[in-house]
Length: 397
Image (cartoon, rainbow, N blue to C red; front, side, top):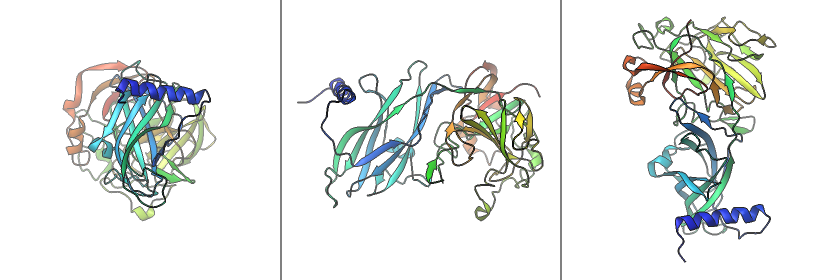
């Protein structure tokens, strides 16, 4: 008997219901196993007016037969398995990473091999379900044999994800107009796609990190010698607390890096990776991280109670940084690298435009002219997360 898609989705829902009620269902052999990398997935509204859902799946081929991922579909587990997004072909490969954060060469997974699958969903407001499910189409082993066999295509569901609605609202980490959310969410990039093996687990602490860089009045991020930190308009800007909280840790003794270069990889440690920095406990299990600040500029010490808007230090270029900027993100532990990054809402700011990704990619370093990216009519925003390359105004200096 051939089932329609609607009938197939109904079967999925029925099986899930029977399982929940305690009825046994027939086991299925699933050569590639999938699990959620980090619990606590929170949808959030971006500056594009859409809802975004960002998380990762850990995929492992647990069968002796090499496996090839053909398709990964994200389903609405509440509404008959309705399709939300399908990843296949080049799109699927683009979202695959090795456990070392490098791009996957293809969609093949060797026996005992593991890949990380980056999921980014863009949904209309009001269209976010409470639970997701994934349908994998895999060409791989079809039996639990311990020797390689003939690859067979198999389709099955795995890795349910519960979505949580609660988000923290904070203030801005900087003041002034023309701040660009570089290396931001949500396409696979330097922050989004980077995992770190720390304390025996793989962490995505920088999942929602932003490198804030400032445009001058002519639309440039650098004006003058690009090897001089003083040529960057954001250099020396006050870094401020996004909320009341308690300082957990700081670093304040590293020299600025010469722009255009990165430190010798042999000198980078977990302690100096992000340069001079501040970690603040904001309560409710969330911590704010501010990185790459100027040497000697950090004004707070561990244990200090800080109020929102208080100056913490000055924007610099210390640590693993090639140009002056403020790296900022929220995380669920005081460990800068051994934590999970969380989204948040900035309570109020002005959206001034967005730099096209193609234009930013073509610029040498950050030496492009981005003046035309500024919108003729800025708009006031409340309770949103600034997406990649958004230009915002955080108020008068």
